[in-house]
Length: 351
Ligand SMILES: [Zn+2]
Ligand SMILES: [Zn+2]
Image (tube, rainbow, N blue to C red; front, top):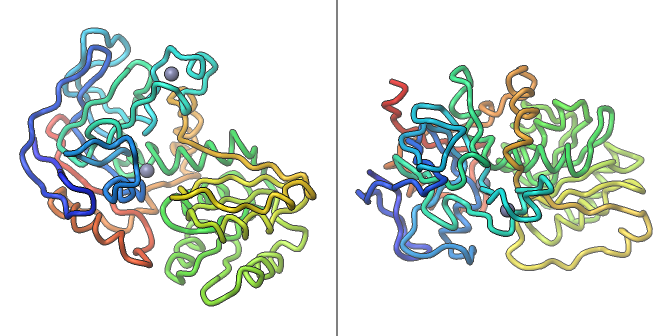
């Protein structure tokens, strides 16, 4: 098969022939239909992820059709269209037994712990636990994006922060995952305030559901908080930081109302200094979100099927596998393009 392949961190990947993957006993091999370009893939390529062993093939949010199955797979068969959470659970450990496969202690992640989906085929482990059937009617781009950013934002807002209709949500950082939080917040009936330094990102945020935007370019952190409070005088009920910077985490915390909930989604290369005094004084709750177990996907799929949430509206470019290395490299730019890039592959099983 052909795959995006690198032997050194930070060096432009090649697109080349590699051996076809073989399913593990409880796993499957999926022929990839589409896969999203995510900032985590960029972090992995830059050497920021300790799980990655070289040489490597990135890619972790995908939709495709099962091409082969291991002997211990019972719930899925060749020819079924599926997606998968980027955290694949083992199904056996205490976290999995408690329904929290997203923090499984034996988790595997395509594109991190093993080769991923920037390829014609990808191996996925513990298929019965992790695969999610995807109806043929669902847009390939929408389905692919459910594997990482939409699942992470959905779990963060619905299961962790318990965002309710009528509440105020502030999203700091409007890249792919931040914009997915804007869309989910709007679909849940919240009033969404989007914050970014990019006018293009804020324009997209408005288009997909933000009621207010704060252009933070050139402003001090205190000025950004003040601008947010002009839109939400009582403070925000829920904040999301989707960028992964110490100062924007602090902005999100300071924008909260007493008893507010902060969801941290942006990945921080180093542990930040954090305004813990405000957490105490306002009795704030700080939450993480690390994907979502397959068993929790039906409600998210139903929201997409209802038409109230349209992940495909975030896709700003669709490229081929051959264009993927350059697109990954373009993410090194200080202000990456707004929206999500989708890598579309041929899928003979559906043609
Ligand atoms: Zn587990
Ligand atoms: Zn991702």
